[in-house]
Each structure stands twice: as C-alpha cells, then as structure tokens.
Image (cartoon, rainbow, N blue to C red; front, side, top):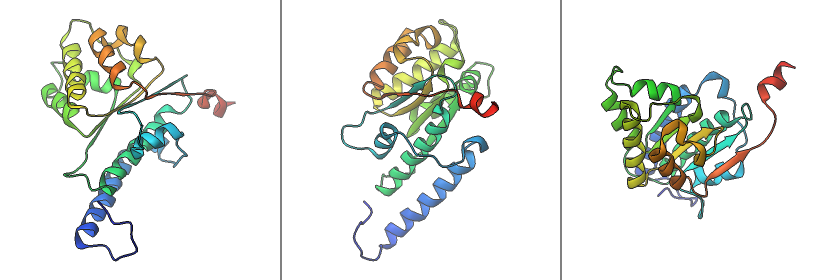
Length: 206
C-alpha cells in the first residue's frame, strides 16, 4: 500500500506511481472526446469507485436518456482504475469498455474471435458495459450463451461490473435473457443509482 506519511516514497512506490500515471494516460486516450471533460461524480459513484466501506460490489447507473449516465460511467471507471494502483493491487488492473451493441456484435460466431472476447470480458478487473438496453440478443442463440458465460463467470468470481442502462436490472430479461438478468440483479444489489434530470442533448439544442 502506498505511504500516506510525509516520508520520501520508496523506489517501489515510485514505480507503482509511474505505472499508475501511464495506465491513466492510456485510459484517457480511450475516453471518447465527448466525455473527456472532468465532472463531479454522484456520491454513490464516487463511493463505489473508492471502495468505501459498505459500497456495493458493482454499480448500475440508470435513468432517462440523456441524463449523463455514460459521461459519469467513464469517469467512474477512471476513478476505479486510479484506486487500484493507489492501493497497490497486485498485477496490472484492467478495464474492458464496451457499448452493448459492439459487444453483442463481437460475440457473434462470425465475429473476430468471439471466444477471446468472451474470455477478456470474463477476466478483466472491471467490465464497463454502456447502454445495455440498446441491443437485444436471441434467447437461444450463440450470442446469448456467450453473454451468459461472461456474467456467470464474473458472478462466481465476484468481479465487478459497471453498467449504464435506462431499464432496471429486474426488467432486463427481454434484452439479455432470464439467466443473465438474474445474475445482474444479484451483482448490482444495493448498487443501483438513479440519475435524474432532463435530456441534456435536447437542452443543448434549445
């Protein structure tokens, strides 16, 4: 764990801090231009990213279209990544970021190595899935099975997910299937945060 005293940092601490800066710089390059502006996070998102005692294992940001869920999620994921390095987590923390439509396409059998995509989504430190209700999968198809494999593995391994969606977990069965919806409801128990407000896109166009 990094020192919080006024002493000079050790070589190991300096090495960890350098890795942290590089990791955050790489993550910043992945943030879409529209969402790069720094914002104040809702307390629930900040507490989750910081690992505050009592915070849920996973976070589900919901609310009407245009209230800022995606912008919030990107910066919540960045804060989560920062904490992993600051607290000296072993290895190199990884964040997989996907829009639901892109992930579902990548999981199709005709996609570019869907098995590798499945494995990466199963084992990364944090899986951030944006706009989950934007795509639907066949309840009996290949993509549905891969999606189940992803969430079942993360559920049993107790690995966190960060999800944005304008539909609550209990109402996701028609989109992701009953088995995935059940696991998501359990994983995000206590971690559902409703974001309120008007559609910012429409406000900007007014």
